[in-house]
Image 1 (cartoon, rainbow, N blue to C red):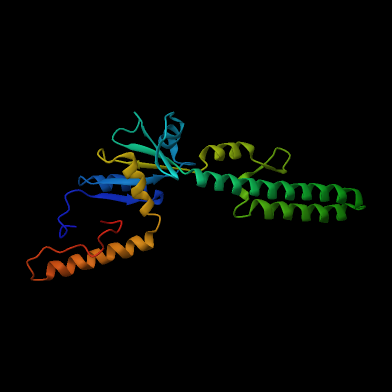
Image 2: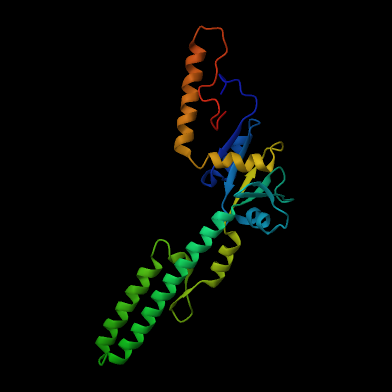
Amino acid sequence: MRDWKLGRVITVVDRGFSSADNLAYLTRAGGHYITGMRMRDGGDPAEAALARQGRYQQIRDNLRVKEVKLDQAPGRRFVICHNPAQEERDRHHREEAIKRIEAELERIRAQRERDAKRAATPKARERAEAAHVRAECALIEHPTLKRWLRTSKNGRLAIDRAKVKTEERLDGKYLLTSSDPHLTAEEIAVATRHSWKPSADFAILKRCWNYARSSTASSTASAPTCCCAGSPCC
């Protein structure tokens, strides 16, 4: 970074690196950050930002943004991004998952009733109930379906309707935060879109770095030109 003589550095990270310690580290030398935030378990700032009313600004055919500032988080900007196409995909995937769960729960219920009538001995009823419990366990341990389930007071599985309602509010949205006071909400949103392809971006940055090193070591007096002009890092 010293070789590049950068006067202003903005680091873009995903929500897995957005802890308070990491963000403080990125700003301690005068730099700034743009990072994603967890919307479902992001704590008070995320909940407050998502609850704030405001009008979206259309910046792309498939992207709208809304900036929010919170008194409880001075120095931080929050940008809510909304993709209408992604909203449709999220809704479709959730509805398909709910249909699968409802069909499986109905199958288990009906089979339990049939076995209760057929089983003549306590041991037979015990074996039948064990089979139903295994079916419920397989459902609640399913990698994609388990998020929509809860255990009711009678011990049976049920669809978590409160969770479904919460997820409907988040369809097609993602939340960003930045410490930079000069970027526009559009610039913050677009900057993170490049970070969706980390392997490709890393390859570009590596080429830039290797070129910068070779140019610094060269004895030529002309200023080096970036090897990837027009790429996201330029």
